Amino acid sequence: MGHISERVAELVQIPSVNPLHAGPKSGDDGERAIASWLADHSDALGAEVVVDEVLDGRCNVYARFEGTSDRAVTIDVHLDTVGVEHMPDNPFDGRIEDGRVYGRGSVDTKATLAVVLQVIEEMKADGQRPVPTVNLVGTISEEGGGLLGATRYRDWLLERGQRIEQVVVAEPTMCAPVHGHKGGVGLDVTVHGHAAHSSKPHLGANALSGAARIVIAVDAEQERLAALEATTPVGKGTVSVTELAGGLARNIIPDHCNLYVGRRTAPGEDVDEVRAFLCDLIETSAAPLSTTIESLYGDGSPAFYQDPGSDLVKTLAQLADLVPTTAEYGSNALRYGEVANQLVVFGPGSIDQAHQAVEWVDIAELDRAVDIYRTWLRQ
Image 1 (cartoon, rainbow, N blue to C red):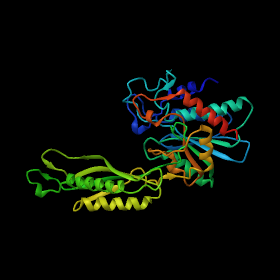
Image 2: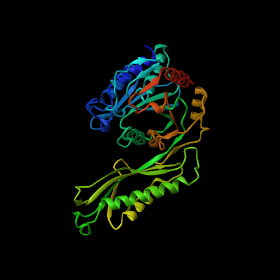
Image 3: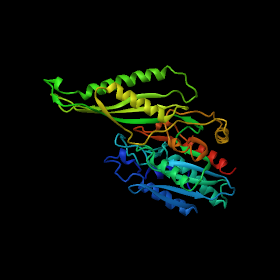
Image 4: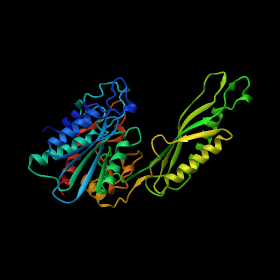
């Protein structure tokens, strides 16, 4: 068993780019190879392994390492990474230099997968087992596609009537336990107009004009949200238009326009109410043109938030000697509210290195995470 940095490098060398981010450098295998690696490696370590196909041969892996108590914890690690086409170096070389491990997924979030396996291997070598039963869960589709893997694992637990006492969602948090982040609602909008020759615009109905009115209305709603008082450290809700596409030719009044409206939800906001409000705002501002509004990646998620004084947050904060915090980004934690008594987002390295053209994780962070997991899983 080598140093933790070598295991992270080994995992980086297994490409697992989300198919929605795939390109010539990455290939289109998605998470298949790393899921197979995790299943085989966990089986060799004595785990009870379930390989659960979620979509088109892309599988979640649930590895259950039996503990010595009746307590159970889940550590969720998403297996997919973002794309690599913009990376100047070999994205999968996993090189170790300057006190870092480089490559796609090194910090987001193969580091935690390596850390947990390292600790389990240490215990097995010493003839020991973890105190809690450890469910090491590898999920697909976190980086794009609507958190399909986490949704499936949640449903898999619900089908079996199971709840998990403590769930850790792996993300780079500099080993500070994150006890809250925003949820979201995403709306794919088509504005319907009527085509005509641009020399006679009165004979048509310009879909771009309807879309422009939506953008202005969404910007005004963002100003309203920004003026509210935040009720938790997670902050306030936000809304923006982040995609806009339309136009047929320079001499044609466009008959349709597509846009994406993204709404981040704060703790306490009701997702159904937020969606209904946004749909009404979109339809009203586009009028007299009609709209089609869809949620291509699900109906949205309420924010994740729990008391920073909960046992799991306090324990990890004490082990890391860090103050609990909140995050700007989202994670699989948005799917686990129904099945987790306690929930936290936690892992080594900085989110600032995630998704970058050069991705890396500090080896010192990996060592700290190993120390934390080594202590936590023995108590």
